Amino acid sequence: MRKYLVVKVATVLIAAGVIISALGFAMSGFDTDNYRQYNSRWYYMN
Image 1 (cartoon, helix red, strand yellow):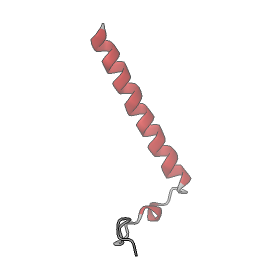
Image 2 (cartoon, rainbow, N blue to C red):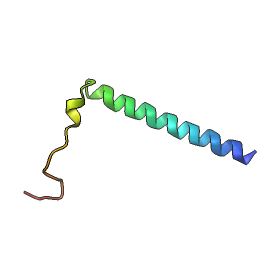
Image 3 (cartoon, one colour):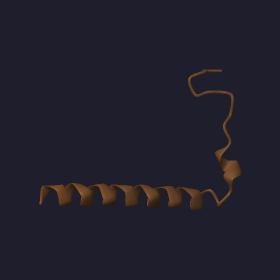
Image 4 (cartoon, one colour):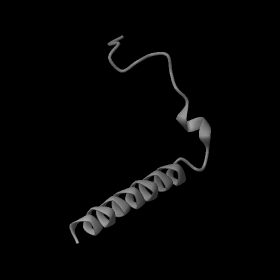
């Protein structure tokens, strides 16, 4: 019984992650250029 609960919780968490990722991609306007990586890192305080 407990094994099935773990599987259900894992499935819900994976589904929530996929939904959040899809929402984030939709909020970017479905444009992969919004995910460019910059050489300047956040910890370089310039």
